[in-house]
Amino acid sequence: MKLAVCIKRTPDTETRIKIAGDGKRIDEAGVKFVLNTYDEYAVEEALQLKERAGSGEVVVVTAGTEASQETIRTALAMGADRGVLLKVDGASIDPLPVAKALADELRGGEYDVVLFGKLAIDDYSHATGPMVAELLGIPCVSAIAKLEIADGKGTAEREIEGGVEVVEFSLPAVVTADKGLNEPRYPALRGIMMAKKKPLEIKDVALADGGLEIVELALPPERQAGRIVGEGADAVPALIDALRNEAKVL
Amino acid sequence: MAGVLVVLEQRDGKIKRVGHEALAAARALADAAGGEVHGLVIGGRSVAADGLGAFGADRVTVASDDATELYQPELYSATVADAEKMGDYAAVLISATALGRDLAPRVAAKLDCPLAADVTELSYDNGIVVKRPAYSGKATYTLRVTSPLVVISVRPNAYAPLESDKAGTIGEGAVTAGREGRAVTTAIKQPERAALDVTEASIVVAGGRGLKDAEHFTLVENLADALGAAVGASRAVVDAGWRPHSEQVGQTGKTVSPGLYFALGISGAVQHLAGMRTAKVIVAINKDADAPIFKVADYGIVGDLFEIVPRLTDEIRALKEH
Image (cartoon, helix red, strand yellow):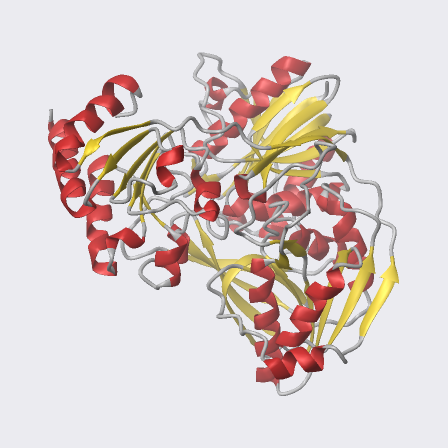
């Protein structure tokens, strides 16, 4: 089974965001970058699919700067076989140019399943996976929490508001992983050592022009700290009074 | 400006509140720029679209078919793209729900145009300008659309539905056939206990590690029941297996913007605050007076939640009975 996983280098979830001097991006100084949280589930699922199939290849693809090599090595340390870095000059806040670059790389690769995380925790667009599926003209199920593949067909479950959708699809296909799909493995020392020797191909790619221009990236307005209405259960009437008569939300 | 096409999400034949919210967002943009708001409903035979004029639609097209009662990604995206091509539009608005987050990028790829996802504010200044949270709410982008067409997904609870006495017109459209059958939604499994979704609820009651045990979440559930609220959970308790991931609020869970948010026994880690800081009113109950949650809360009670929450639940029940 031939599998591709598209990943992204993102700031760690505990990062406190500071805005860079130009007011259009984050200040990366001191920021710890990791493999995007949801991509961990995608990598794990690909490894399990290959293990269940008994043979195959897991290829990790990313569009990013030189620094993304480190992120690819993380996925290789988990057990992926090889990596491809589409080296781009900068990022695009419009997800379509990135999806186009990834689709161009994947096209003709004869992958049975292409996996993504359901979103990148930096841009939060939930977009690249479904876009790549459209560009490749193959089916896609996004934000899946359960996946079964047998006899060239897949069944996936995805959470929707107040329920779970069951989707059947043919291969090849794109799926995007939600939390809960699996428990991602931690790279073992042996995996980390082996990852250093696995092939990592770097290709220079120019992103197409996007249709969104960043005017500003700003911190949200600070919430005014409110007030402590009291201590213990005796403060409940004061809280209810505040919610009814001050905030008028009850 | 050319018009705005709004995809109105339905479930079981009824237009969802998020659809009305998207119409309000479209109306704000169309009124600022000049242009009409057209609604598009895709659904089964029983879908009802009357009354949408009052929510801001100048015209609504209904594309109904037995095949599209449930969300079918390929049929829906083709139908939206075709509806866009048949009109003169500057923007296609879709609610940023589970459905919309799947549909919007497909439509953008089909129409070869940019996608601005999870938008909380739309305006017009010689072109469409949007605000959207990134880094899960820790920062906000202001983006200018530089192409003639854009797909925008609108975050639930960002706009309040309009109420007017306008009528609007309703027409019949068609579901775009073909290419179906490669990915087919076969069923929706309902949970045993029908639960309000944390992203759509106007009140959320969330619990954290301060509850000490999964069983104690009944305190959270009871308060939520009394308020007609959805139950939310911190990452710590989801990772501990106390609650399902569908309830998790925060950077690797859901981002919510309810009118009222209760944080019970939640200390307020950066990644949790990112998911709920846009709530209009935040109430925190925590035994630690120095917990970071009190820095964002509008109202706080310091103390033992095992005493405070039952009393709060009783008093709210009493209030509702009057």
